[in-house]
Length: 117
Length: 221
View (cartoon, rainbow over the protein chains, first blue to last red):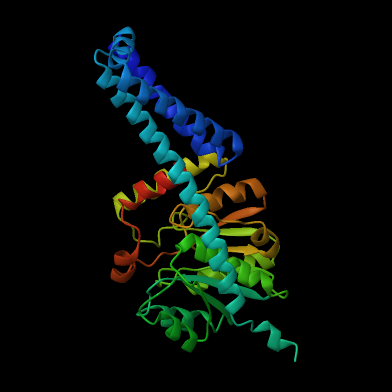
């Protein structure tokens, strides 16, 4: 059972990362990220008031302790964070490249302009 | 020869770029160096040697420099051909001239240099293996039967050049270029070129470890 949960988690990590990496920064992906964040926050608050709920959910999944479940969730959210940050970084880099290229080309001497005189 | 711009991406190449440009200019009077933020005075040396210097305000990488150079050359309405050439002196001017001759003869729209079509190039077994693997990978991915996918010496006509849009700033641009050529579907040929491995170009060139970076950048784009 533990192995199955682990495999499911690994698949979830890969799948979510790929979707978010490929998907870009459109509204749907933003919504998905916000929903995931809200679920995470609600679960965190719930675990403060009802620590046993988390443990029983964990044992239902066959993981054992609630802490382990939180750890796995943290790993997944960390990977999602990494993937989205990478994506944003790529977009920022593309914008910076376009800007730098514009400056470079605008400032460059244009020898062919002299040919016409 | 129709007007040809030679595009040279340049990053801290002060010791060699002058002689590279001086070697090119008798054959190719139009040489543009894309300076990618050099801090060793390469810009002045390139200008003194007779090249036009286009200056990136910050360091962006070789792929970005190539794209800037192509766009610069396309601004010249007289441009018919564009040659990409390395700044470290590992390419030969006669090879570039022969490639442009093939373009002008209408034999192809793009001529790609390959160091594996004859036995002039002296190359170590490990490097050969890595380059051959890269060539097989690009063949599987694009269907183009290339023998050398990571050769910086290329000659293309205006039509092909205007349809190339490199977005991989760092090392993966070579693979990206092959992918884009495969989509453009121009008439292409490979041309045997000699790569001159000097101690300098070896020290500047890609180490074998860099193939890890190339793969990672391709996968995570």
